[in-house]
Length: 149
Image (tube, rainbow, N blue to C red; front, side, top):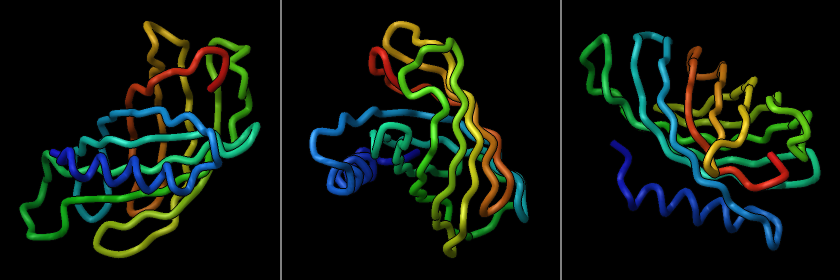
């Protein structure tokens, strides 16, 4: 599991990199990844507004299950910039695309496609397809700001 200290470090790093006054939205997610092996991961992160249509995010995830027992690094860190098609949440479901950098044993480029659901009790469900360091499917929940994605 990701430690509280790692989560605070992620939040601090994004806060430093975010524009002044940007609201940071925490998120948690579960992922199923396929690279050299198959693994399940749990992660935490934060995302913030980097412009009218841009969102920046930083996340940390850790293996909770692997199909192959190895001594390889079990922690992944990623920085992603997403372009959202519906920044004001005018539609019930929003789509965004983006890319970024990640590190797990070595650095890699990352591509992401995301579907973000409607706001429910201050949270939004998030579904992602990610390519980079292997292929991944992710489901998570993100804190939702009223009237924007």
